[in-house]
Image 1 (cartoon, rainbow, N blue to C red):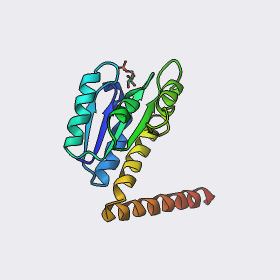
Image 2 (tube, helix red, strand yellow):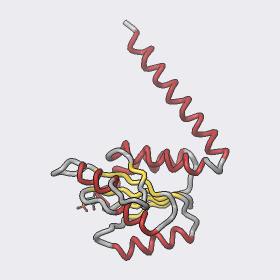
Image 3 (cartoon, rainbow, N blue to C red):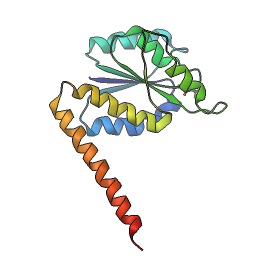
Image 4 (tube, rainbow, N blue to C red):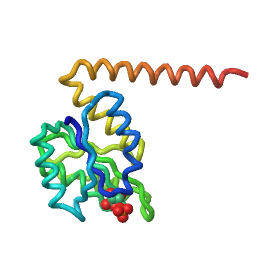
Amino acid sequence: MDVVIFIGSESDHEVVKDALHILEGFGVSHRLEVTSAHRSPERTRALIAESEKRGAKVFIAVAGKAAHLAGFVAGKTSAPVIGVPVESAGLGGLDALLSTVQMPKGVPVATMGLGKTGASNAAILAVQILSLKNPRLKKKLEEHKKAMAAQVESASKKIQKP
Ligand code: RP5
């Protein structure tokens, strides 16, 4: 299992659905768990240790509000950690964004944008990290870029039509 995704609450599940499809599309093995830095710190610690034993190469941590999940994971593992802040009522996600991005020196979290888009980009970044040692993934990423460029071109052609 290459990629481990932690979501801080069941309420974050919707946020990661596209990201799961992306990982499946690239044929990347992954595991999804609900666990919280605040509500279940012991479970989170144990899941990190178990995932490392099972060969996890990249962690993705998705959380809202005072989002310490990604930082907690980054404090425990030397694997790369990608953080995804989630929007919520009140501060609209700025709380989670700042909590995730403002890590102290020495403990990086690669922080994505908010919500579903951030989670999808986290999946792609995880694939890019894995592709450094996997030519099959590198080729698929290149195809993905070409498909995006073709989509932009066809969108442009579509709006030119009277
Ligand atoms: C965070 O608080 C979770 O990651 C979630 O985004 C947010 C709200 O959680 P619930 O109150 O819906 O469980 O810990």
